[in-house]
Amino acid sequence: MVILSDILLFLTTALIVSITCLCILLRVRVSDRYTGSFLTFLVPLCLQMCLVTLATYLSNILEAEVLSSFSYQTFCLGATLVSIILTTILLLMMSRYLIQVLPADEKQKRLGNRILSLLILLFFLISLWVIIAKSKGDWVLALSDTIKGHLFSASMFMLIHGILAIIFVKKTTTWEEERLLKGIRNTFLPLILLFPLDLIFFRTLPFKLVYLCFAALSVHLYYFISRQYFLTYEAKEPLHIEKASHYGLSAREQEVLQLLAKGLSNQEIAKTLYISPNTVKTHIKNIYGKLKVNNRLKLFSLLKQ
Image 1 (cartoon, helix red, strand yellow):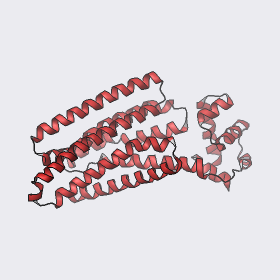
Image 2: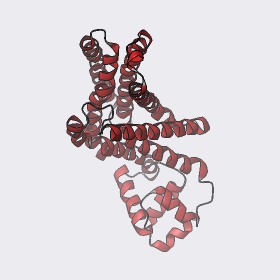
Image 3: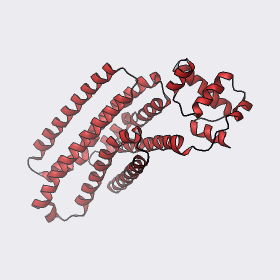
Image 4: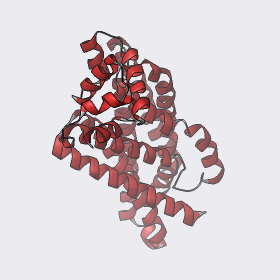
């Protein structure tokens, strides 16, 4: 089980690091609001997973004399504090981003930010007190407890995000909001099952199954921004909208399709045509069904041929 844990930890860390680097490259190239927002919590997550992997690796290869030395004790103290801070930043940035995406009014968003920020601050203070009090100056033990349990415990906040996504996903007005909330919902709801499995099989190991949810979220976010990048910056070939007339689209559906081809969001299309966002969603679903596609990338690819 220890070997399996180390392998899974390395693979998960490698995946998160790779996706974070790709997001940074896209950020440098396009500088849009999505990559900037995602990196506020992808970077802390990446650094945290690297720190977990490094601490696990060092504890496995270093000799007992080195592990008990003053220099290593100092390293463990610093790594413990950095790990707790990174996890706190991850929770805070993730919570703020989720609240920003939710289709709620400004008053509700401010209240949500205050409540979650207070809970995260309380979690941070409790984490410091518990870890330092339990270690009693043994910083190797403090780092070990932090690596094995702190990020795992913090994942409970992500379950809250998954529940909020379920509540608000049906109230979204743009396809971007809907995609993001569905991604958060699908990646964090499995925590309900993974928490007990971790407590049974991975309780004393550095790797936890809940880390797979973070990896899944990273994959979803990268897919989302790469899709945005393609639609916004790389889709330069002309779209042959007239082709859609052979698929039996209604006059209104053709209007919606023309606005989709211009890159307008659902909300913008609704304002342009003086209809509700839900009606826009219905027209888009009908267009997808008649053209036998299930997303905008496939739709635009079809209209380019």
